[in-house]
Each structure stands twice: as structure tokens, then as C-alpha cells.
Image (cartoon, rainbow, N blue to C red; front, side, top):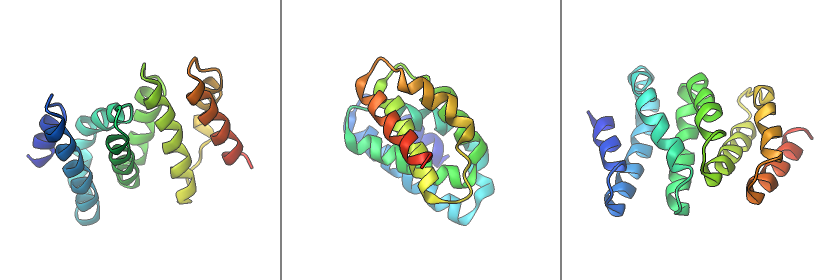
Length: 148
């Protein structure tokens, strides 16, 4: 019920409501993953596309909240989040979403929880040839950092 309310709020055209709903979703994900991980798994397919879409938001705050929520969600459902980043984040038409997907990859790797980035190598290589210069630069930085 709360996840659905957040989803509706995030989709709102009212920027204030959307921001508060996104913030609420981030806190809700963190809280539920700490208390009852089984409750978040059925919701992943509904909230993951919203969070990945918000990675491309024009506002830094929205991107930051979405990135943090994705990192928290990854701790509980890593396979789903990784698949979502590959399928929706790296293939997004929005260059900011592609750039933030690279940032997500770097942050997950930095968390050091046994994350293997090898399956992301083709996506990083493709990002090196991206039409957007910030995406290419971010990809260079991520490749250097991950392979050192």
C-alpha cells in the first residue's frame, strides 16, 4: 500500500509531491530492507523502473535520492537491480540516467560486498563510445577505477 502511494506520488506532475514521494520511497526501502526483506521483493518490479527513471532527473537531489534508494534495494535484491540497471539504466535515452548508472556501478563496487562487475563490462565499453561526453568521461573514470 505504501509502495503504491509512493509510486503514484513520484509520477505526479507536482514537483514538490514527486520529491517528497521519492524521498519517502527511499526511506521506506531502507526501513523495509532492515526489518522484513521478504516484503520488498514483490514490490521491486514496480519501484525499480521509477528509481532508474529518476536517475535521469534534471535535479541533483532527485538523482541522489534515487541512487541511494537503488543502492539500498540492491542489498536485498541484487539480481533484480543489476538486471534493471543493465536493461533500463544503460539503455536509457537520457544521458544523465546512463551516467548515473555508471555512478551506481562504481558505488556498488566500492561497497565491497563481493560484487562482480564483469557482467557490466560490455555496458561500460559501450558507454565509452556514447554520444554524450559526460557519459564517456564517467565511463572512463569507472573503467579505470574498477580495473586498477
